[in-house]
Each structure stands twice: as C-alpha cells, then as structure tokens.
Image (cartoon, rainbow, N blue to C red):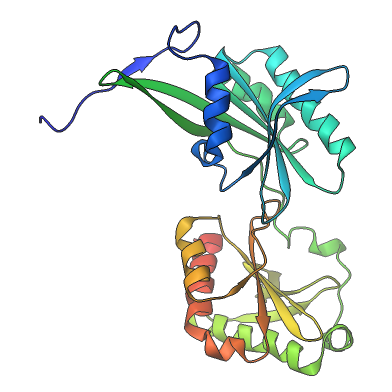
Length: 289
C-alpha cells in the first residue's frame, strides 16, 4: 500500500546527523517522549561532587518523585550502570525528602545487561529504556521503549501478618463516625459487583478481605473531615481522564505503591457512586484477574 512505508533502522553511535547531546536536548524539551509521564525538567548536565555530570534530572510535579536519567548511545556497559546508580545515590542522599528513581536510556540494552540490572531491581528503583531510531523520508524519528520497569513493592497486604490489627473504635478516634461510615459505603459498592468482601481494620488503613484473606485492591483512610481512597491500578490515560472529567479530588498517583489516590468529601460517594464503582470494578479485575 502506498500509504504504508517501512522505516529504516538507524544506528546512532557515531551517526553524523544526531548525537547524544541532541537527544538530551530533545528529551529536555519534551520529557513525555520517554514514556514516564508528564515530567518536568529540573536540571541537565547536573554536576555531581567528584562524580561527573548527571545527564538529566526530571521531577513528577504531582508526586514530587525525581528521576535521575543517564543516556548512552550504543550498547549499555558496566560503567553506564555504575554511573547511573551512583548519580541516583548521590541525589537521594542530598535530597532525601524526595522519592528517587534511576533511569538508564540506551540504544542497545542487551539481555545480559538486563539480567545484571535486574539483580539491582527491588533494592534500587531502576528503569531501563531502549532507544531506537528510524529514518523516515529523510528524517530521523526516535522511539523509546521501557524494557525493564521498576520492580513494584509487595502488595500492601502481603505483610499484614506483622501489621498491628485494630478495630472500628480505633478508626472512630482517628476519623469520625461519618468518615468511617464512608468506608462502609465503599464496601457496599464493592459487594454490589462481587461478593464476600469485608473490611479489615489495620493501624495505617482500612483494607479489604475475602474469606479471611486480605485482598487490597482498594484501601481507605478516614480523616476528620474526609476520607482518602487509594485504588491499586497502573497509571494510564483512561483513568486520568475519568478522574479529571468526573472532578474527583486527585491527590496524585503514588508511583512507589502503584496507587491512585483520591480524596472524598462527605456526601461525595453518593454523588459519584457510578464513577467510583467503575474504577473499583477495573481495579478488582486487575488484581484478581
């Protein structure tokens, strides 16, 4: 077909048309191109004490999470991995008030180095992004693909055997009768599309349980004047649009735990019942298949 063309793969190492500095500028101008969300550029060529320069420092404006990003044309090598982790560690120590994530962007991330990087994942928040270049009608297009995602932390219920179990009275003191009843209402919504769930009161949140086992695709934190709802689901444009269009009070996506965070005021659950149900149905399906 005339409307379909086959792009030509381009190797960027020693390419006369494009170099690492140009790619750095492209990402700095439009951070979303690398697929980590709507990030904001904080710095580039950031000087590291006795350790060179960090290519790019990005920040998520909603969660204040920072990404230490290192670029490399050609194959990933040992020095690239070590440098990326070193810069991440320096920034983490200098600015401990932020959550930090190391990001490797390279043209060729081999399976061997994916295995090496994977050894750190879980101990060091680390993301690997492969960069491919294609020539289309004389122009070069860049495609960024996440080949190794940060290993998610254990689900919030996996350590509940060491959580301090509380009861309803504990939460009545932390919140109010009205906000605790909001958790009851959320449970009713859950059991309207599935069955057998009950609330499980823990020290830091009210979770969900089924057949005596924690199953926290959503958790609730009653406060004095509102209730925080956290729903476990991968961040995506569809959910972002629903939350924005339905005017839910978005508290920002928790990248560390993989939760959407929503603040619900008194009476809002009734007003936005169908929207909340829609999100909970998808979260339950994602968690339990």
